[in-house]
Length: 140
Image (cartoon, rainbow, N blue to C red; front, top):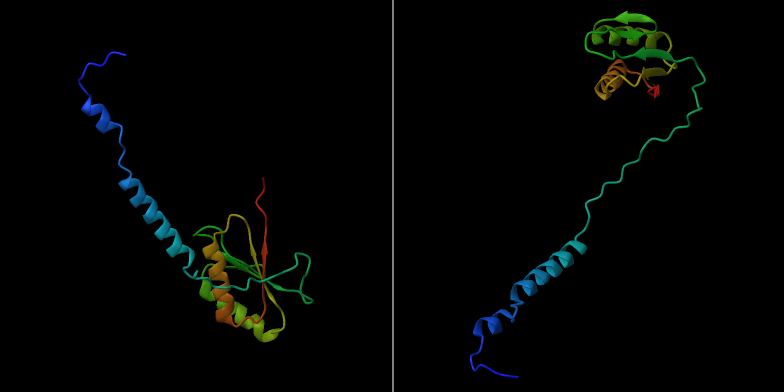
């Protein structure tokens, strides 16, 4: 081969790759993984209620239906109530007559979870000892 005598200094410098940034990144990843692997997880154990879909109460329950939209009325034992406070009064009166009867809260797919929470709050305020929830499935 014929050599020209001139060396290509730029090509020689470009052929060397500096591995320092790569080593730094790998080191940081190793440190991160070691720290997160040994960290204790904050876990809270929650006992969820269990129910059989076919199990029903022995006595006939009282029925409470929360409204599905804002301006509709509450329905308790077939009677409409515009105000939740009126439902509490009616429920208290019914519990005085038959305290062993459970309260069944019926909600459809269109009822928001907030309305269900409101109905459960009404039951607690009125002093219902046994509350059941019946949910209808949405139609496909």
